[in-house]
Image 1: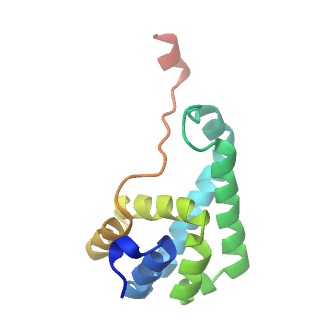
Image 2: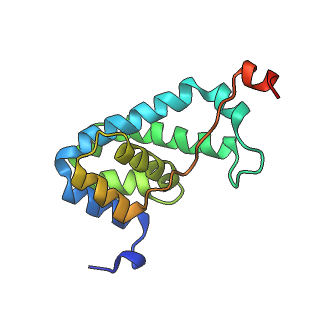
Length: 142
């Protein structure tokens, strides 16, 4: 096996999926919920997106769309096959959104303690993006 610092995201995701195959279905459901969340809040997210962030909101939503296409195309295969899960969600740029989902899953309280530790070891614990929404009242008090 390669050293951790020599692995790419797909290889790390495959190891995670092989270690916790019983949690893949739950993880895929969480990714679906993240997709739905971003789709429902798209207008607000685009408005709140930091202009100086290294990626654009358009790029982020391309990743969300790619994940949604992956879920539709591979459906149950994503949680039945660790290889398909890793190859489809974590290949190339798609890994950015998938890693975001993994880290959010680890911090959500839904992941077992061991899975939480494995995600943190393999992918870290820093979220890809966080957005702060301000209410009209907040803006008026400045």
